[in-house]
Length: 230
Length: 107
Image (cartoon, rainbow over all chains, first blue to last red; front, side, top):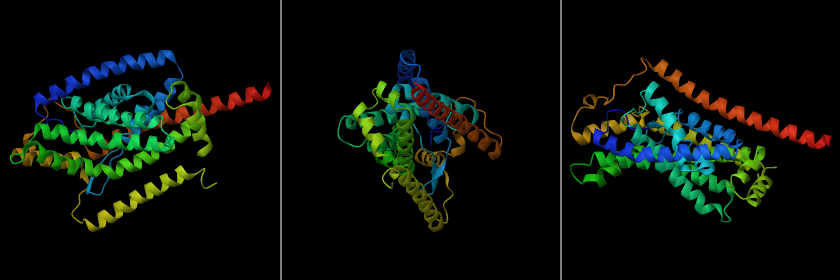
């Protein structure tokens, strides 16, 4: 889950806001460009963004005896890239910090960096690496989604460990401790999220393959093969 | 037949497996509170800094939902917004696809 308001020293809040802001601006610019180029991209943004809204509100129990929620950012980062995804995430995170006391305004920058930027960036890199290989389209989607989810919480752990190095062992010890809480809890959630969003991707492929081909998410041959398979 | 529904089957298996794991962990970990990982993380921060959890106050004043009911209402609202987006677009695409195949049939 997100870092709670007040639990990050103000210096670090400023640092993460400074990292997040340029990415958000790039995202807004890219978003305008994509929508102006093709109005049919807007419904796709609605679906992929919709899943960020849905999945990030579901707090699920996990093996560590605590709860966390999936992020749902994988589909969006595959279709639109991490920068546009960061804008959608910023909206969700703002909603949660204003109305739910989940996260907060000062830690919003740090939470945007973990859930909106680095997590999706990792998912996007995985997708780009596998995109032009013979790996099945749905396996690619599964891996990108699951890793985007998992790395969100690896980054959360990293942010907290940087701010709170342990007295003995310093940053490394803290990082392992925070990973034990955030990332381990997330592993089963990331796997389920990967499978579910791969299924959602199958329905997008079945209903609107042309938009995926036009936006070069996957090649025509890959989409046709994916339609035949599943 | 089975192959064309492979993803659906996998999704059901994954969700059922997730539920089974939850039932198992909740039965063997009797002390588990299933609190948010952010709360558990905050306790660790308190431990690392040697301060009380209560001493961490919001840097920017924050409105908190007065009760768990109101909080869950707002969380449900958030997922409803997402659900409307997803459902609306899938319906729009389905209609588009249908009208396209009808135009083709008429020509």
